Image (tube, rainbow, N blue to C red):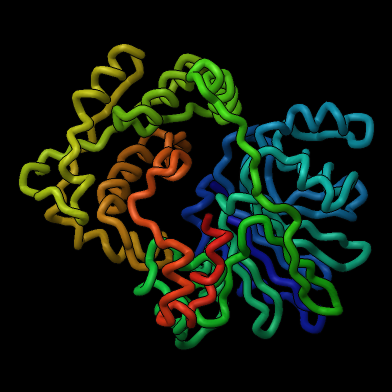
Length: 404
């Protein structure tokens, strides 16, 4: 996780103090290095969490001739294959994926996005033409917010844009209403703050003197093959986990004892032989009833996780959770997520991540099998949206095809 932010202004010089406020707001995303750079019409901020090429991966990064600039947050898993393909076009100075993405952009332009296998949000600037592109990955894993009030500004988190506004900040009425109607699906393309938007999955913005234009560079529309037997899935999972372990620092694991996290922990630790595993210990779970608000509170994952960790010989830490103190974490979780907490599980996960962060710079997680295997806990059918007029005022709920 890194932090990116920037300002494009064709009419006024970029104010350094504004960039510094953005950098401060994103410090938690990149404790290893915080940099800013001013160019004609452009200011860039980057806060780095160094995982690959720890010494040479500083950003902003530019091409040898100074034409192309990039600030980047993400991980492209096939960067080594792309690097080999580009080595006759580009004289590489680092071993990190950031420079590969920069070289790919210089070589193929926006067409390079279809070659990237990974998660990313980045801004690329063409200094010769004086125009830039803000891009987000197809699944929307890496966040990026933007606003064009006054000038064009963007950042990994809306808080960095709020820091540039000064004075009182107004809430976005539609976002707040959508939260209360459908909290699980709200906040896709606009934030809780008026005038601040989120770039949607697969979306790009083109910024030039003519203004800001928007489009989608791709669409996540997989055509899954029928996998009738588990051996068909195993090599795909093994390859996916192996690619996710590319880092020059140890990678940790969240281990619940369930199918997903157990497989990811096993395959990841077998590949690297380093990193710790962490498990939520609901020591007060007997005080909660089995209802919609407490489904996660009653599950006793500890025995399964302990058995798995011992079998894999991975260092394992149980993290005791005191749910009676959930209210102590509401403000911090809301600030991190830039929205009001929706699920009860956000509170123990917050404490789990806090504990893991003491030892690990990054972790991998086995998640979302419920959704991918059609076992969604809550759902809203398209017929419900079409029938019920109370949903008609909310554009997010109309885009049911996107949610599907």
